[in-house]
Image 1: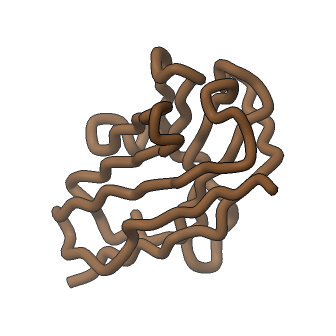
Image 2: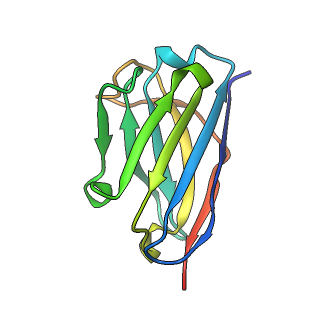
Image 3: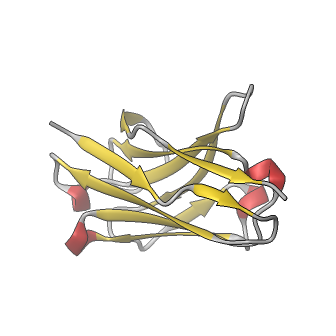
Length: 122
């Protein structure tokens, strides 16, 4: 019933930008914090960014600060990740994940999307 569907990935040049979207359904979207998590080829999962239920609090991994912006539109049940100044090391599958709480301070995910591929290459 719960569905998280990512979109917006693709091939981009280094220094370029992409905006990822995650369409959520099957739960009360504005009751939960959300996160983006990624997995680069041959590597483990890496937390990217999180956002509280109403977007009032945001969190970023250090390497993403100043380049990525997480946001949400609760009226549209959609989570976003704006990615600027992309680097080759940002190449990964990006997943949208639902937290089990409101604020995302102690994230524990119970649902994941299928992921969207981001490839940064010249």
